[in-house]
Structure formats: structure tokens, C-alpha cells
Length: 229
Length: 246
Image (cartoon, rainbow over all chains, first blue to last red; front, top):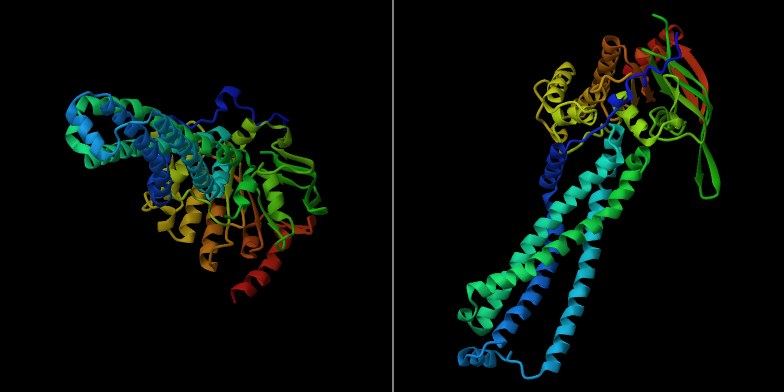
């Protein structure tokens, strides 16, 4: 009997492990579909914060534009609505407050999303352990969970940005006058506020998912399978 | 064909720390298993058999001592090689089945093949054939939740065989099953061993397992207390198996 390492006698180039992207996307989609309830919560918490952000920002942008107009009708409507600026100092203070609120809500969202992502990873420790028993590399696990968070973040942020913007239009229409805002004006403001909110919301979600995912992927399979949540 | 050693352990210790207290789960286990053997590791819970099982499967590392799989000391393997070993050379079966809940039977069985780099069609066909072999040809698209415990364990067996492993490690495979289903699972494992010449190592305290085993290794308090060959067993099985079924 030779002491040749039979298990490892194959050509090292044959010893590869892979998880094709197509399969990764499919597995993520499956997970999202089957855990709709839990993910709906994450979607909502992201969407609400992004909506708040977009709404505050776009309201200020739209109002500023209206204040810049010279026609008598617009000024009368703004006056009636109590938003015609008389005092630049008060305006600045108001804006500072808004920025603070935005930062605060962002932090709240971060903690909320982190908690939800953390739970959604920890409740799948056993699954992660099983995947590793079947030959999954740490990077497969990380890829699966990060792709999932990118999807949740992107969809949640997109819905939130759109929802927040529509709410603002509605608010201006009701408190002032629908006729005041033109299409070009609306599109310009949307283009200015939605993309950063979308990118920020998505980044926030992925950032919140990174830590629990890497921690889970690095666990020894036995430890991962022993965890009871 | 000359017998070859597929698994060998040399003085394996595993020590856990619970606070400041040392707990020795394994105290110097040295055994060897030949290719194609069916080994049962018997012992009460807490005797260290699952810990040992994890060491052999490359799922955990011993505190001291060595585990050789086909003459390779697996503590010397890097992360990638270890994952490759788990993917290609070892099949795992668990007491709790551990199927991926969001995937159907076919996808569960083809997953290790996907990791191993097999194409989608090829892995699907092979998974379907394996499922047909374990008697689930008509359950391909069922998800774990839609199957009984026995059926789930059959899927797990098919999954363990996906990449034609050299070793199957089964940790209490009948622990969550009733008597009859448990026996069917043992029969299936025995058939697989005969058909594919795969080495089977099970950790169990199910006496039904004894009859199928070529050798039984008894664990107590992290030590091997007795090793029995099949010839010595037959007499005992009659009484134990008979007593349990009565």
C-alpha cells in the first residue's frame, strides 16, 4: 500500500470550490421570498427614514425655488401659507434643526436596521453551519448575506425616496397650491434629492449587515450549528 | 484489495473551559478505521462521541493529538482545503436533518455539487437520481417543511452522497425518528455502504445501529472503553435488539 495521499492526489487545479453568481442571486431571492414577514420590517424601517430625509430636503428645495419667484400670485400664496421668508436668521435656525433631525433619524435607522439584520443572520446560524459543512467558504456566506442586504437596502430606499417625495408634493399642494409647482421644477428637485437618499439608505443597510455576517461566516461550523436562538 | 486506513486518530484530547474549570470532553482517543467499514460509536450522552465526530469531520479542532484522514493530518489543512475536504470527501448527516428550509429536495441535494463546481444541469440530474435511489423520486420539488422526518433524513442522506464522498459521518441519524423509520434509515445507510463502498461512521446510542455495524466503539467519559467486532456482537445484538423491539 502506498502512502500516497489519495484524497488529495487529484490535480490541485481541480480542487476548486465555487458558488456562481446566478446561484447566489437565486438563493437570495428564495430567502427573501420565504422570509417576507421579517424583511418587510427592515424594508419599512429603511423606507421610513429615507422618506423622511427626502421629504425634508425636497420641501426646502421646492420652497426656496418658490420664494425666489417675483410674481404677485406666488408671493400671495406663500404669504397666506405663512412660509414667505421675512427673517433669514430664523430660516437658518430652522434649517440647522432639520439637519440635526436628519442625523438623529439616520442614527436611529442604523441601529434599527442593524438589529434586524443581526437577528436575521443569527437566526440562520445553523443554516450557515450546514452550508459550511457542505463545503461553503466564508466568502460564499458573506456574499449571500451581503447581496441580500444590498437588495433590501436598495428596494427599501427607492420606495422610501419616492414615497417621501410624493408626500412632499402633496403637502405643498395642500398647504399652498398644486398649480404652483411645474413638472420641470419637480423633476429637478427629485433628481437632486432622491439619488443621495437612495445611495445613503442602501449603504446604511449594507453597513449594518457587514458585522453580523462576517462574524457568522467566521464561526466554526460546530459552533454555528450549536447556537440556539 | 488491501485494506487501507481512511481515518486514524492519535491521542486526541479536547478540553473546554467552563469559567475556570477544565472539562475534558475527549481524553486521548486513538482509533483507526478502514475504508469501507461501518463503525458505530456508542455511548451515553456527554461521553464525547459528538465531539469526536466533529473532530473527524474537520468541524472542530482537537486541543491536542492528530486526526488523519487518508494519511493527511487535517489540522495542517488551510481553510480552503478544509472546506474542500468537507465538500468533496466527507458527507454529513445530522440528528436534526439540517436541510436548508427555503430549498426543495432537489436543490438541497444539488447544493454540494454546485459548490464543487458541477454545472446546473449535471447537478440537477445527479441529485434527481440520488433522490430516486433513496426512494424520494416523487418528492423532488417538496420543501423540508412538506416532508416527514424520515423523508427529510433520506434527503440528507442523498445530500451527503452528492459528491461521492469517501466517508459519511452520521451524528445520531435516527435520534429524531420513530423505531420503524429509524430502521429504514439504517437499512438505507447499509445499502449505500455496500453499493458505494463508502466508510460510514455514526455516533449513536440507538441499539438498532449495532446490527449494521462492522465494529462498535464504546465511549465513556471521553475515553474508548471497548471495541467490539461484528463477530463478537452478533450474540449480543439478538438480546439487545430483541429486548428493545419487544
